[in-house]
Image (cartoon, rainbow, N blue to C red):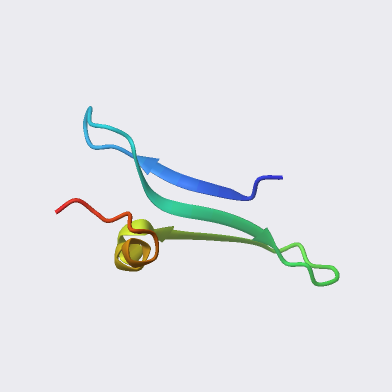
Length: 59
């Protein structure tokens, strides 16, 4: 199934924007009942995203 996706936000009545990424994983070791959640803000990685994809933040 789907284990993650974009984190969406908007300011006031402005457009919705993807501001982060969220993911879920389970520990696969025997007898584990541990769930891991991870999130990151896209703004922290915008330089690398711009360099790799050519999709850059507006100035």
